[in-house]
Length: 381
Image (tube, rainbow, N blue to C red; front, top):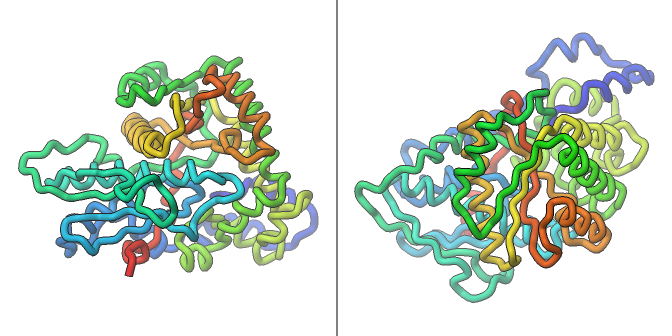
């Protein structure tokens, strides 16, 4: 995440003394540590286990707050048993773990794409030990060799996939791209909508902004994000997860004592205002919004929503379209109930249905790679 330049300059103007010109002239200062993004190279060329080769790609899936809350058991031959990491949840903003399971759906879809690219059919059984609980697996995946298996073209987009959190440029969503994304959506039980009418976009933007402001002004929900913010290259390298803050501006603010987790929790500080500016600049640049809705909210449906979303994002990547989820107004904690109901009304999704994903679409440059932990850290002992 790049800190807003205008906020940084405001700090300089407020009297914090740093060698501003020197800092801004060194773009690689406090850059993303290579160890944190080595996973984007894909599987180790020496790896022969097809499960681990596929897992190396699946770990690149989008997931809430980049928690990477996946645990895999490889003790059975030709089998992966997938669990949720109980230590990597979002109990304040995602109290029912709906978003966490959507992230597991993203993981399963990329795993299946990667398995097929390696000549294996991934036979996925959801919740094999009964209705999901933290002590039960999300899925059991058996790898079955299948010669001549077709490789999905979307697999080639996996290492190119990005969640763009920065501002989009001023271009409107190309109607051809909008039509292609809608036509390529292959999950009829999960309705996909994309709107780019200026009036509708503005109304949705207002609700999304209100949701973000509510979350940031409620200490227990804001803290859940701040707890996984990694400030600077050293922290990013140590954790290889969460929300990354890096670069010359962050380096200067951190060394000036203006960028700390404590200050990011305190309204009125530079760190808090910078986070708000960053979120709002993304909303302000949105020229289109989309959403995925379902008639029910079963655990299987949440997994299916993740699989559908990541396929949409991979298809968008192939077209050069950027996506970023905005989950705040969909969250199920009590204080968000009124805004969530308003989002249902604005999108036309019935009150008894579920908005599974809401996101902005547009165009942007490559924001760079997000950290990923080593494959070995996901395996049970």
